[in-house]
Length: 504
Ligand code: HEC
Ligand code: HEC
Ligand code: HEC
Ligand code: HEC
Image 1 (cartoon, rainbow, N blue to C red):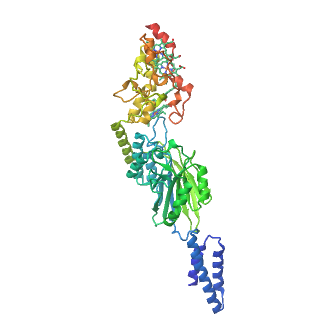
Image 2: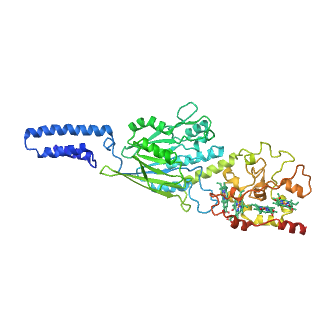
Image 3: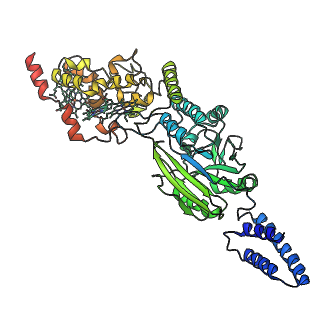
């Protein structure tokens, strides 16, 4: 009996430095040593009261891991962030990491029995119709992967309240405790509770930073301060969960502040940051891990609960490299998405370029227009030949090969004048403007052609406007770009004009 009690106290107190525990154990030892019967009874009574008091205290405080059911010895939290619409890598250069089909290949072999799979936000690229279509397919993928909770980030709130509600009807794992709709109510659940195999309850709550400009928030939405939202929902969450995880689409300063304010949060997963964290950081009572970089990697936080009643954490970042196989089911989904793109044939809002006003392609007889490379060949034979043999002349085929030639995200850099009122529309309507041809770099050529061929040009001819290489050869799509080296590969010029004209 006494021994049993001793075990019980010891168990409750193991690993604790709390003086009450030591008193209880000490009291027990004394009890065992007591010789006198009366003294023995007295001490037993005292120690039983003490034990009850300690258990009550421990239970009430819930800080010693006793009131909590014990978690499984090991469980892992897999976390992603900032997929930003990268359903798969564009493949502009070799060796690109990322994409959700390879992410699933990794997860399928990595998931232990007990795990949580979460996303800290910014799943979508944005709010345009084709970006929302892509988001819908990414979420179908997330459903197959078994995500437990997906936080709303800043890119999601570019959408309108109505658009988000439609997405919510298709996908149920979103959380956000500080995003309000037009009715002033939360758009999504503030938190989700997930039970591990032994019944241990993990509560996952989501917030985002509220440092947004008015034009960064979609129609009918508003964002409340994250700390107010956590303060509001934490009491409920504490009742329903043994372990609390905060998904924070927030910068590191906000994350630190939240950790300092709310000691009850066990783990914080962010965020709106520059870099993934290689190691778990400790901030007040919380463990903080960060992930970002266009969904190119998956973070894994291993949570170990030792018999000494201690929590141990370690983390890894796994990069989803190109050489990995693609999961066939998810790859299938992506093909479906591409067919949808083709069926719907989105035409982006015209005149995004150069601040042109919304006038139609045949804006006026006098306006300069895109005419296509065939109009240049006659006088710039050599430049044309060089271009034709360059990769720029095959830029559309590169999209066709990937079945991405209806994807607005790609057409922008693989055609001429996409988004401008007279730019590329579709293969059928504007076949002369597919590929990266002369006017992608030199600007609209109609006036120039007319002037040079002595056709009447009614307004004063303005010199061809030049486009910088880096509008397309940016860091993401052409990391190796070097102006000199690249120019060498496509060198052409005016000298040839003279030769050409002399030849004629
Ligand atoms: C910001 C501009 C930009 C966007 C957007 C873009 N690309 Fe590219 N793409 C490039 C550039 C620049 C290159 C050449 C890179 C180099 O060789 O340095 C390229 C090259 C490629 C290539 C390699 C072709 C070859 O011959 O090896 C493929 C394939 C490709 N892109 C596909 C896509 C797809 C698919 C998308 C849309 C998901 C896309 N690109 C979006 C700029 C872009
Ligand atoms: C009828 C003949 C003719 C046609 C067609 C023609 N060019 Fe030219 N282009 C010329 C001549 C001649 C010059 C040299 C003018 C000068 O001395 O400035 C020239 C100059 C240029 C220049 C250098 C000067 C500048 O304005 O920047 C560029 C670039 C150019 N052409 C691009 C094009 C493109 C692109 C097309 C097709 C859209 C095209 N040309 C069609 C005859 C032509
Ligand atoms: C990838 C971008 C790009 C493409 C595509 C391109 N050019 Fe050029 N072109 C340049 C650059 C850059 C120069 C170099 C020098 C400058 O104008 O500063 C140049 C120079 C020229 C010049 C001489 C201009 C001068 O003032 O010396 C002519 C003419 C010309 N290009 C015609 C063409 C024609 C015709 C085509 C299509 C068949 C074409 N270019 C395609 C980028 C391009
Ligand atoms: C409108 C977008 C756009 C612009 C502007 C542009 N490029 Fe490109 N460039 C591409 C795309 C897309 C490809 C890939 C085409 C492919 O491989 O199918 C490419 C490929 C190339 C390649 C072939 C790379 C290789 O792997 O061999 C060179 C070289 C190149 N560009 C040079 C230039 C230079 C120099 C400029 C500026 C004078 C320039 N480009 C401007 C879109 C652009």
